[in-house]
Image 1 (cartoon, rainbow, N blue to C red):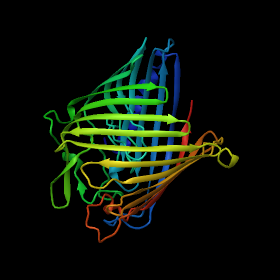
Image 2 (cartoon, rainbow, N blue to C red):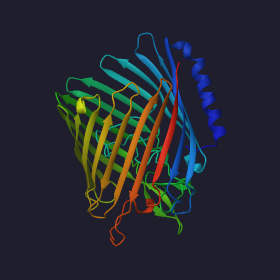
Image 3 (cartoon, rainbow, N blue to C red):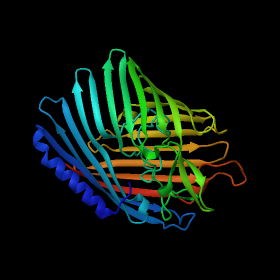
Image 4 (cartoon, one colour):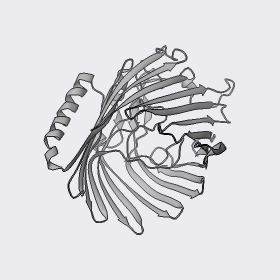
Length: 398
């Protein structure tokens, strides 16, 4: 939900007041969160003459309450973002507003939550519970809160999670002045739904997971409104999101042998035209204490397959962990599509400053491939969007 900044502050202030006034019901109360400043600088003006620089402020307060018997807990976390350039990046999102009841071997979770599924690094195939916050990050890691009822049962044969997902969150997209935007304007105010209930439809999902020594495996199924829209022409320069109804079955597997981790995510989906299958398979090998130091170096290789397309992009990466008191790490990689010649290079780094703060750095380079190649390209419209992002985070504590 996008809202004016003053409206955001009013909403979150009201919610915090209600929560604090009822805190006496719990024996344990924790208050934390973060405030961040982010600046993104692009190497040149955008394909549509967007500005080269913009910044944003984000406030994310979080409250946690727990009963004396530790069987009941309540969490509230919200995210408020104000951007200097793109109004579509202004955000008020309740990411967690949930009550959790624990009894014997099962848990009941009611409210707004974020649940992550998956094991791979480059593409998140099975992660479908929450909608993607596309304007927050290019890689799709950031998610919006989803209203749900989640029942979780733990037995010797595994953990079974059953979800009733109440209502639907539309995906966020960069606006006309935003960077990393589509080659057309997206009218998010007139989204079209296959379901007659539109964004009030209740979706359902389940996930079974189990661990067998070195193997972790999970099977899941989702039935409901697709988190990934198609686009329908509205005018010559704008399109409208269309959210169809899908069924998606997913498989996750993680097998660990010493410093080697083998990873797999695979899906089969129907409802968006012909049924299709897609998978990401790869490994991560970690060298511990390289050169007799505290440094750990991880090598990442992943192959992405989707039978809707001819190409299968290959991703190579490294993860350098310093194992120091500042939790310093550097993740870098390249994704290459041999069919189109496209190359996507990225570097991410972060370092804690004392106990209060963290600095993070991100840079992404897009190479659109050979212009003589007439195949459809994934990142052609981003060829002028190479950027460097710097973020300073201040942590709020009790």
